[in-house]
Length: 75
Image (cartoon, rainbow, N blue to C red; front, side, top):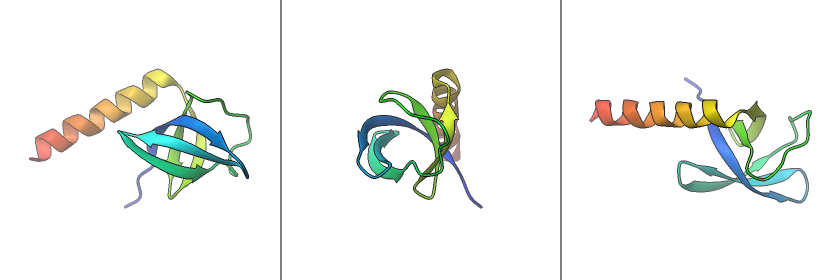
C-alpha cells in the first residue's frame, strides 16, 4: 500500500528541491512534479520523496490530525 502525506514547506532549496516538515520530521523532497510555484509555509502532498500537488492548510492539518487519531486508536 502506498501513502501520500501532507507536509509543510520549511525552505526552498536549489535544483527544484525543498525542505519540508512532516509531523515534526524534516525531509528534503523534490518539487520537479509540481506545475505551479510554491512558497515557504505552504503545504504539499508528498509521496516517495516527491511533492505531487499543493494542499490547502485546513485540509493538510485535518489529515495530519486524522493520522494521529488512527495511530492512537491502533495502540
